[in-house]
Amino acid sequence: GLEANVTGPFGRLTLPEEVPGRLVMVATSVGLAPYIPILKELETSGFPEVLLLLGVRDRSEFIYGDLLKNYADQHDYFELRLCLSREKASAGYEHDGYVNAQIERLEVTPDADHFLLCGNPGMIDDAWAYLKESGFKPKHVVREKYVFARESKSSAKALTEEQKQLIADKLKKYGK
Image (cartoon, rainbow, N blue to C red):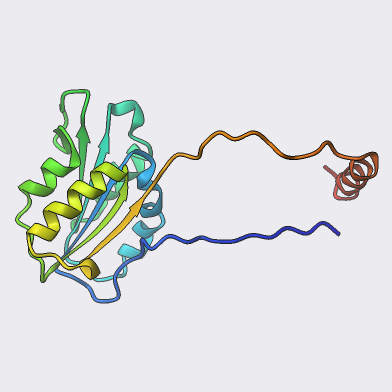
C-alpha cells in the first residue's frame, strides 16, 4: 500500500550515436560516476580510441582505481590519465595538475573528436571555453555539471502511531 513518486535519471552523458574518431571522457572526482556503466558498452561500440581524463586532488580520491587501471590494461583502445592537483605523479598513467591542462595538450579535432564533460562547474566552463575556441560545436561536447546538495532542514513530520504500525507490519510480513 506504500506509494512513491520517482523521477530521473536526467543526465545527458551517453555514448554518441555516431562513432567519432576519438571519445574523450573528462571528469573531476565523483563526476566519474556516469562513465562507469559506459565502460561495458564501449567493448562493443566500435570506438577506435577512448581517453578518460580524471581529475582528483590526491590518490585517496581515485575511486574505481583498480577497475579503471585493469580496464586500461585489458583494452587497447582505452587510455586512462589520472590528473593529480595536490600530489606528484609517479605512475605512467598519472599526470601533475588539472584535467584542463591535459585537454590543452591533446591535438583536438573538432570534426572527429567527441567530448563528455562531467564534474566541477569551473572545470566544465573552462574546458568548454577552450574547446569552443578550438572550433567545437555543442553537439560534440556534452556537459554535465555537478553541484553538491545543500543541507536543508527536514520538513518531515513525526510518524503517527498508525504509520509506525503499518511499517512494522510490512517489515514483519516480508521477514525483515
